[in-house]
Image (cartoon, rainbow, N blue to C red; front, side, top):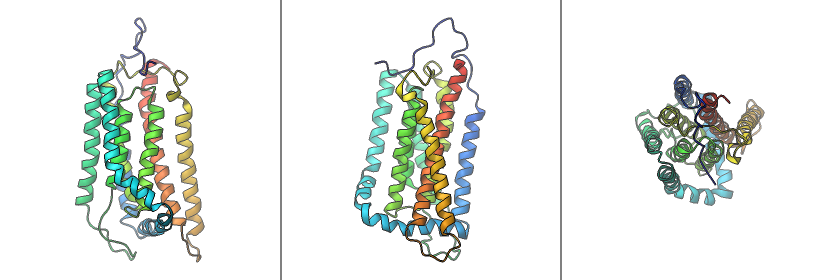
Length: 300
């Protein structure tokens, strides 16, 4: 089976000749950067944010008692698994499809995201004392979540447009599960995971522009009905999960704030909802970012 987009047929001008506009990708990068900054300012620099984040971390102990061993095993294997998956897929696509530029860009973006996370974590000041009982050591962004998300992003960048909707959903789900696992094992607060996703999204947006401009011949869209991985259902499902997670988190948060009843898992579920909402939300946006320009160039 042919697993890549067909080359444009001669005699159909404008299918690959139009230059991809830079502003959507640059705007996406700025929005991701703003998301990172706002996550830090709210969840680290405000009392309410610290309380929500720390409460989710404390309540994760309930989930850890039940599935902590399994998620710990996943986290132990995560660095190696992420690197192996990304390397194998990128290497296969590079050798099979000769996408040397795209592979190089994806690898640089993956390295940039992980380096940025470590630099941010090292140079951000300790968490301020705002009256919340919490460890002052800065843990934002999550290194494990960055590694998982950047590996998924590298694969997403090098595959053909026909594969991107499915690759985005699978990769986004992988990163989300990794992020939730760090919360369950009480390695990271929800905001640490969310911040990691924004770091990866920033680098992915910039890399996507270069990939689109460096490979116009293979960045061709054949339509959502041409292949199962291109089906609209992937993007619809991603958007639906984003909305459902956001609504669920908001309703749970509203049910516990301002009440005298003690919470054992509510803030944990709010944290999980945050991770799922931001993870799938960025996945949804990334899918649109790398498919809509291709459709416009092809007149579809």
